[in-house]
Image (cartoon, rainbow, N blue to C red):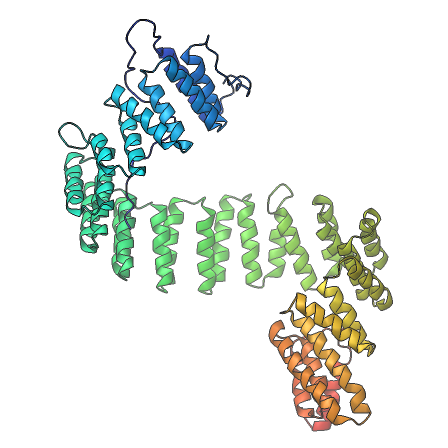
Length: 611
């Protein structure tokens, strides 16, 4: 929809023009100094000028009869600066009492009263301002809006029209058109809007008003015709081309939409917003090559615009031209070697291309003074861990945790210390948190994980139980204890209850779901051993369904696949078990958790004669 032009009033804006001074003995006019001081005060408010006088305190903002209106104006302006609208309004009311014939003061009271929602009071003072200064457009527009708010259509028209019946100004005319549209006076609105176009040929507002009339009438063709007329009159106005494009998009005319934006480029070939929009349109149409050309054109004009370079490199990756993306960034870095935003982006792209060594080298270049340093170092840790270079990951983490104190970084460092063989060093780091707060549930949980990784299961269970005591809703702690019990074949009812509670907290966690499936499997084992195959089959059915769900939730995991193989093998379905074991092996098993997988796989292959 065409944006309707409306003349809004900015509260507190000084009125240009002469002062209407009161007549008669005994009244003191508002001096020229008053207006100058008010303007200076407004400038000080807007610019936070250090030379502005201190704001009066609440006790200062009281009527002081011995002072002139100038003093009240200053008090009012400072109150307005502090957004104390009531105090500001009261100060200007005192000024009006001292100089009731100042249109400036009347208008100020009106605008502040309107802000406070005191519509009738605002109308009264706005009407007085208009009576005192007929040519004051701001006062007329404010009074018109206040009357419009009250539903006084006739009163609005009276204040917006001059003696000849024509709008007193462009803003008044636009407001009249809006009023006519609201009251379904389409013919009058159309005539008034056309008259505004003729009367104000150098203004854009009348065209928007005219377009609004046609839009309300539902005549899309006339809306577009009006926008085209405006483009002819204002060939470089970007908002018009954008509006034309929107009109064409609304009817599915993509080619027309593109043509509208290209018209603007003929006038302003460096218009960044239009180049971006056209590039996005090309992406929507699947023409990535054309999208690249528009982004490249924009980047030529705005070589410092990081988002354009990111868009270009992203399109390069979509087109499987990662080398081109790297070349773009390398070219930029030749000119700007210390632009570490570019360095970081280059590292991310290298990672996408699988160039881990080069990515690490780029990330290592980013200095501690740069905003991306922390993220760069964390990515380096992740890369080192992915290649199982624990010492290198630990070295970076030890440096990182000192530069950016953060318990999360400390917890990760503790884990890396343990994995590097320094279990006690990891424990000591976590114990420092427990020394500060013995009930630190998170640190307690992390300590349990350290002991688990070190294969010290009894201590792990002990600390996991403590973590659960501090935080009964820790789903992972519930799962850990429940799964540990299931692995041992101990207290399976308690294990099942704990894991079910964990699933209530995290219903879509594939690994907790796997734990429940394993509990069902372990319930079947003693029944099979006792020859109670019928009773065992029910548990095996539950195990199979639950583990299948776990595999779906996790997206595929070698441990879950091995568990599915174990269930199938216990049920006597050996070929099905072999398929699951092979799937687990293909998913890159975790030796610490699956020490027997290869042995089971080879045994079944030999038994079934499978290669």
